[in-house]
Length: 217
Image 1 (tube, rainbow, N blue to C red):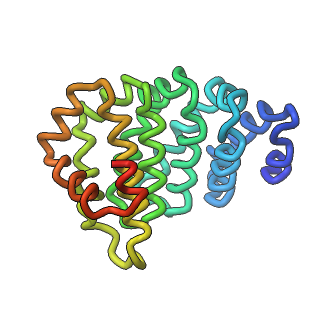
Image 2: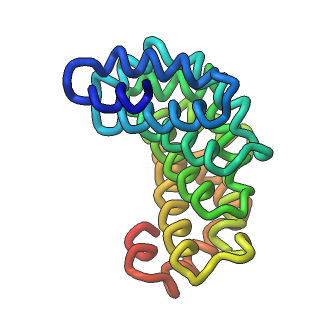
Image 3: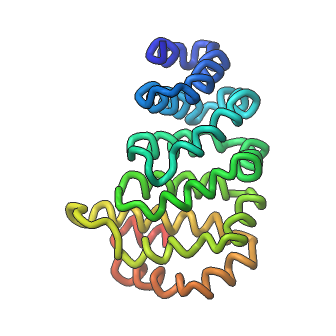
């Protein structure tokens, strides 16, 4: 059924697909939950009407998902949850609901402590998307000192067993983009970046990073 719904994308059936998969997020079967979450991400990515439909019917489902995609969940579910948040956090009203009602940033900040590179990178991308032009999201970061995990990531002291530096570079770039969204026009978070000593790590990336990292930082 989920694969069938995917095939309707762009054919006027997006609202149906979003509603169906929002319901399947609550399914107790882990594989169905992962597939439904991935399907929602595909339906809503770059498609305003689907994102709007999600804002109408999917918020409660995503709230339930966040309670399952915690630090003890399989990385596959964590990654798909982050993709889902990233794809649906397009409209301002949806971002605010994600930040206030679902408290998705609490889950995303927790996932930044993972040693799975994909989980970290997708979490950073989702944080950036939720916090961009969203004051409630920025305020959540400020209230819970949410820039602290960024110190760990930008220092490079994480991810044992990661092969090579590619993941570190991608994570650094994603972290810089997220920090940009978090501190934009938000003085409290700028103070927080200074107080947690994040800035020296960003300067180090500027000096030693690759092209993608330098552009982001």
